[in-house]
Length: 597
Image (cartoon, rainbow, N blue to C red; front, top):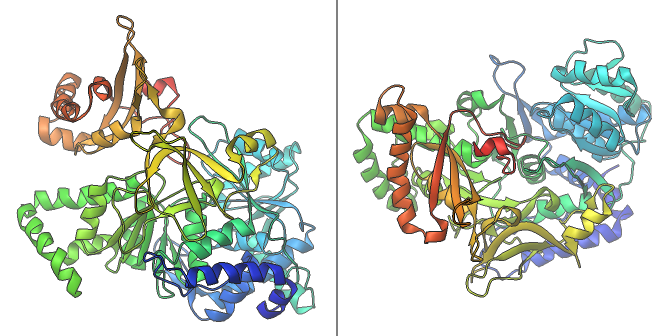
């Protein structure tokens, strides 16, 4: 089926998409700058149109081994692969079924996702960091009939399938299968090609329901309770059409994919958006290969989380300090702020090469980043901005524009979406951030009570606290459930105090919480802190005593406390050696007692 035929069969959906695009194109908002967006109404329509418009563009840059170079797969080739794999999946009786997908970031994962949602069934992206027992429980809860996995997870799911205690009946390996009864991903694609040649159109002619669940994603919350978020095609394409007008995404761009692809941040923003815009995606082989793969792929857009960019930025300056060139570079960067406006970047090649040599934009999400880091990366001649979203919004709620961004803001509201503050404080304007739009989820899977708690009159209550400034930018101050309320009714946002601690150069990470004093009943602010051992050793010498590290910390914390009102001041600290217990999304679990020690 070609896209013109599909559009004629879906006139209402096409009219919706055209109306949204017209709203974008006629917008008078000065921050909505890039209006060369096209209407799409589901992911199949996206694939059909992208495969025609960008047929010969590279979609995936993939590596067959650590030593091999990146090789390209074009949009046209990827479309043929999706059609073949989807046809094979339907032939296995999987139409309308739930299909789990698990593995490293790789093109087979992306093809499996598209082959599932574009005509087979519902995709259930699975978190590869979850323990086996939890993965098995999710298969039952989500009624997963088939799992497509990388070879690393074949044995695990073979065992689950053999026990017969879940609905899992079909297992497909992205690599060469090792066990009996495991199907080969690549052999299935060959089977699908033959079926297509024989006239099987069961997949390619499938009509999708834009408003039905297309993806079921289980979130990993800091409380440890996973919820199944139901997302429709409408949820996803709304994000795909409304975020590019704020940030110029080009068909010549190469996105660097390093964040776990099962998370909506990476899946929507690092896979589906470039797929819509004709860009390429280069898959990183893992965190320890970031530097190597950046040099090999030389990407132009990099989506990351604060930890990645903070580490890269700190390592650059640590190297500069060791070379004795810090003062010289800082002077050069001051000059570069002006020369960049003329298209001249004076930053030394050895610094730009850290990002691959061609980096144009880095986007930070997942958590707040120190604005100084964003400013510092911009001084290197790279656009650096942050966005804000949650899985329940597929995930975008706000994104900083690439021109006119605010380093201290979580983002700007994309066209067609709404954000308001629930019960704002009269003095600060801080209240719960609520979002509304066609990107808001269908609800939580099999949990209408939880859905009704967070979606009220169409508004999704995020659980995040923050405010809107006069220009419509969203600012986040913390999580509603994390707020420390003192005896005299004052609110302390632990994230705010943690932000100040993160600005201490040798602090790796921290967690702040409140504890009632047994003597006075006053709420005291405590902090558990992990330091960077190498940087501390440079200051205190090798193997410093814990007491010396605490004394070093207190010198900086005393300065922080002077800037804070009395009720927010840190009263006690604990230096940790072991890592904090975290979610699979690498967020510290705040309500685990061991994290407070």
